[in-house]
Amino acid sequence: MKESLFLMVVGMLMVFVVLLLVVGLGNLIIIFVNKFVPEEVKRVANNATTSNAVDSKTYTVISSAVTMVTGGKGTVVDVKKI
View 1 (cartoon, rainbow, N blue to C red):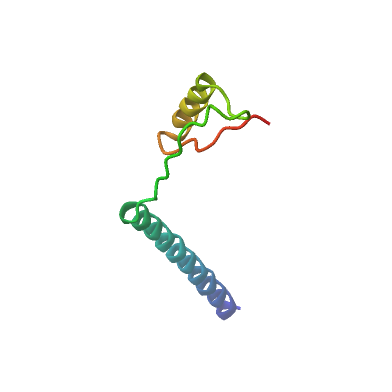
View 2 (cartoon, rainbow, N blue to C red):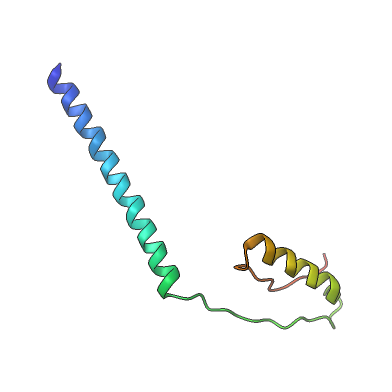
């Protein structure tokens, strides 16, 4: 009885340790990639001349809302009327 409880506790501790290692290494990889591998930013001009594009005021409002919600990390690439 004692031996089986000991094996169960050791097994659960090993699973916990392995999961901690996976989460820790995952977070380190995320930090490394965000710090040293910058995302390629592709700028797209506002196509207000096309028929399905929105007017500049609406585009500005949508762009401001996205910037505010994402904390300056998000950008608006394209806005089309549907």
